[in-house]
Image (spheres, rainbow, N blue to C red):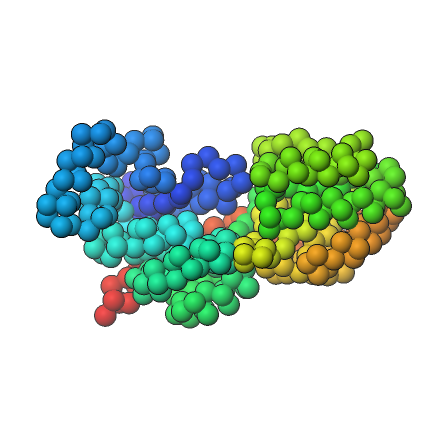
Length: 383
């Protein structure tokens, strides 16, 4: 029976632009947890063992260039040929493209190989105005070719519909969280330690989090803030901390492992994140760190932004303020710094909600159903 099941196991090729990006834990979860034989291609069309599908040697590149120009072949002719060969060699049943631009890059190969394509949007790829301008035409083509499109928030779902994605192809499936690893926080007995986790980038607005925390320190001088992660705004944030005389109260440990993040959350009182929509349109999907904090049993103080609104129920599992409302964020933080019992109440509600609606098991199960149905219905949808 086991041998029969092994033979029947589907092969899914996951295509991701980045290898070992510490913040893309959701992609790693897809690779490790889908109940399929998973093959992975990374940016530059490199395999899991870092071998290129096409030789990068100078003379091989020159030969391809000459042939392409002599025969007036499309610019991506040899790439498509190599990708299709990879699909055939590995008997790929479906392709899961992580991010919209990845779907665009692989859509013609999937169409020519007659393999179902599932495109998983995550955040910037459905919101950044620069991306949308560059890929507007390509996205519409991809919506026609792809079998399924996945959105991780209700806001994203609406955006993709407005871009022209057919309703019948669009599925809402937020990322999930490991509810065993992220657990056991005790905000009622924890000191007023606030924790933030994420890349130091514009849409996560770590500088606004710091401005709010400065107001908290004025009222609760024993409060502390741990900001986990790195990114282009990290040095600017360190300078803000120095300028506002908060070096004694703010810690920047850099990127941490999943286990270290979970341990840090267990000794905290509150999780905070001041996500915003940037002037160039970039926004979150559903931040995994928010899910992890809730699963840990922490109340969350955040903004009414993207998928955060799908997760946090204001006044029940945490508090939400308008984007840019530093005073409002500080007020909620001060409330929880002074009231450990309220923090515990909100944290318990948060964990119950995550376990019921946003567990890793539920997310992966829903994703697998989408992939299975895409494989099953692929030829029917082409009629």
